Length: 466
Ligand SMILES: *Cc1c(COP(=O)(O)O)cnc(C)c1O
Picture 1 (spheres, rainbow, N blue to C red):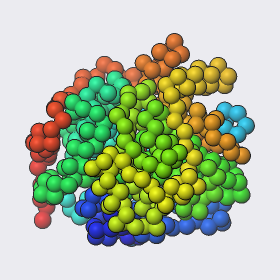
Picture 2 (cartoon, helix red, strand yellow):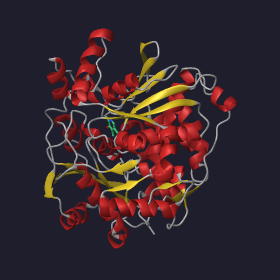
Picture 3 (cartoon, rainbow, N blue to C red):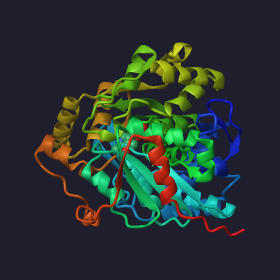
């Protein structure tokens, strides 16, 4: 499988290069040249398959030239060996028509573990075959950073620097990044918002000399391998609910548009999905875009679902590329307009968007009401991100079963849950030392040169074998 950039000017790459590249050299994002399709018979054959074996069936077509099936099988089984549930991503029925897909049983209690643990293994394997190291620099609105540091802290080939917005992540989120002791992982607080952190990372990728010097690599949701790994649970859940005979809908708490793009990809791969619901919080750029046909940035507001406090949804570019019939020139034009005007019109792509997605944003009041009501009625505690998904699912009318992706464990946001319900959810037993372990991190201003100096300073020196 080869990959092409959404902006049409970067070279086509194979999977090995795409997994290390992050952003394409023309500023675009990589997408597969064609969508592999699983036939109804192949989807039916996934009935009863383990999560790891489902992952192999879904992911193998995307990586086939780089990684053989048996190696992929070993990586998948290793990645998913240590989850807090034997089902890895268990499906819980709240009521007829509404199920919760719990994606938070990994080591950092959020769905990002599912993709990141596999990505770390894919990257180590690619780097080993090329005999080199990489420096991962990523921005986090809270959950990506912990998942990346957790997934890569045992890597022998990767250094990690994670930028997070100072004071805008929860204590649990910060501690997941700042307490691991391994010398190859680093958390860096930036005085700014998540969008500032993301802009710094993008600027480092666009500084080609720097990028080559430090062997820069990315694990944000722009990394194609993460999207691929997230496709797995759409198939896993839908098959459990009767696919391919029955179509289900998914409501997806969305920030950077990565997780929901994985749902779109599942649909392109032949999975019968009825409605894909974009669920936002008060940072509702995507619901506004679906409603008005204009993608327009506003200031970020802080909410109880900080991992969705985002105004520039990077992966939306992948969708626009698909919706436009892969018109790289049009995407370049839209992204240039976003840079200069902070907005662009979807024009002829707007009807497509409305056909492909429903969307709804939840206010903070609606999130709180939903958490209290779901607890009272079903004795089930939602985290605030998942609650946005439930609010959207309740609002968007459709037939059949809707699966809400539960993207985080409520104990990851104990302050918000305590304020809303009056009770502080305890951390699972296996994380008991998190709140007392010693923290280690630096704080820097929102300044590219300062951050670049930091990255160069912490980089492990490459022991060249050749
Ligand atoms: C990252 C994250 C999201 C948003 O996912 P995207 O792929 O960025 O859309 C939602 N909920 C939680 C808990 C997250 O960590």
